[in-house]
Amino acid sequence: KNQVEQSPQSLIILEGKNCTLQCNYTVSPFSNLRWYKQDTGRGPVSLTIMTFSENTKSNGRYTATLDADTKQSSLHITASQLSDSASYICVVSTGGGNKLTFGTGTQLKVEL
Amino acid sequence: NAGVTQTPKFRILKIGQSMTLQCTQDMNHNYMYWYRQDPGMGLKLIYYSVGAGITDKGEVPNGYNVSRSTTEDFPLRLELAAPSQTSVYFCASSYFSGEDTQYFGPGTRLTVL
Image (cartoon, rainbow over all chains, first blue to last red; front, side, top):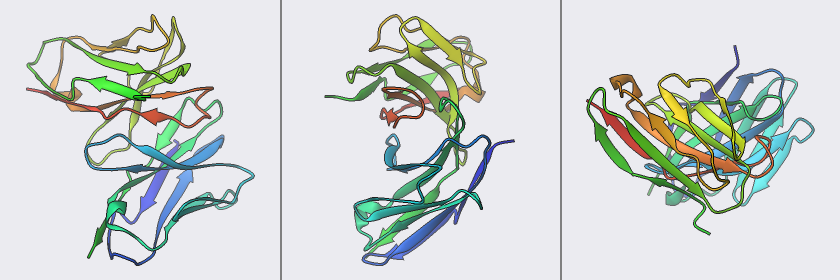
């Protein structure tokens, strides 16, 4: 069964600090891995999308890494801001891409 | 561009009632999707469409119907609402395929009592 597991479930950090969110997946066949940010009461917004051959991708202060051998990905947030408070969702696509497996998300809260 | 818009934002239904959730995109995307998001769970695909006139079932299609008469619109119909359909519903679209970035609407929060 295709699964995407994220850790931690929730995280509280101080503004300005860095953090790293983890994603492990057992999805086959693998097509690509995405990270989404979902603000409370809103739809998810794409941060990064990586294919099998890519092992890192950045989007501003967000940097995602992918290790296709160990089936792990991480999302690193640098110099966190209050606006980074959101749920971060890891999503893995199988072949054809119409079938996505969503993780349950890591709820990040950035405090003063 | 407004992107992906959904109406209504909130709705309360009684058991057995029916309703249509509206979704419109103005990005000329071929692919459109309906997901539901239950508390503490990952999003689940209900139905998707690869173009006008073509729809297909996702992971959790029971109790729902869709149609795609135009590129822009992809309504989701709930027949005989049940408490198990209480959820937040998201519509999304992408240009080429599911491989492409999906753009999500703001969601519709539905409660069935």
